[in-house]
Length: 335
Image 1 (cartoon, rainbow, N blue to C red):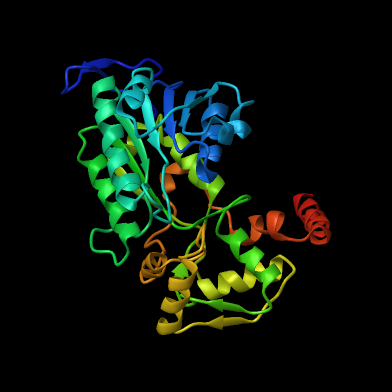
Image 2: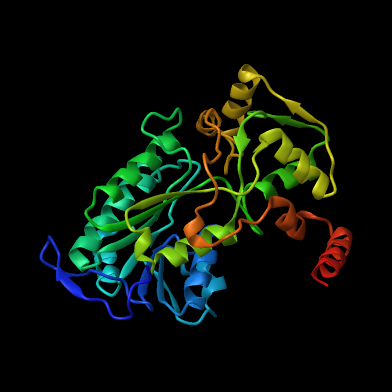
């Protein structure tokens, strides 16, 4: 059900004032709001009339959000306990969207995916915030082959065991304009005459960023989502080879794809992970040992028919000449 407009207050376990229900127009603190998914979530929250505070280490990264009504982008270190506590004291809901595919220096998987959620949970308890929404990843498991997925499972456990009113989302790989997944393969196809591909048979079920953002924004005021973990996938599963071929063709650079066996794939990952901003690491390769697909349909409670890759990707992958033709076809379909 949708929570009433005025939240009733209860005394929290740590002595602070905690909200038992979320206001229809809530004060929402967002961590990771300047990232690819975060920008879409913040836009959805603003459109719904929520008062949104985005905490970021670099305010400049939040420039696309500056003109959104009801949104404030504040610079501060989300890993600083005092900063988190100060921001949670002015919030009804906390949303954590912070994540990384590549561990770097201080930003290890454990720090980003486990320690930060723990700090946010502690700040919520002390600051009187009883509602938390957390984005994890499909396939998160303490027994996963990759450190990335194990750390995601650790973060889920922190949130689920916090005593707060939580909702956890576990999306498959997320696509949309500005993504780092399909756009990466488009750049590779434009650069190389042949694409040697590790993990070619790994299966993914890409989900549109707009659909993910809509679910996260809706959960803020929907009490029926409390205590739930939602797997989010698009309507169709693909092998990685099928995805790369589709991206290469759609971007106007069809290329032969050379699937690599386990030995060569591991060697490729060893080499690529040495580069700044690595394209692939051995941990990424380990993640692909698990099919990244959902066991069931898109959660019906959100009322969303998930967008197909083929309906969205040409809008940002296709060359300019194909864009105009694609727009014509869309216009005809809408008549």
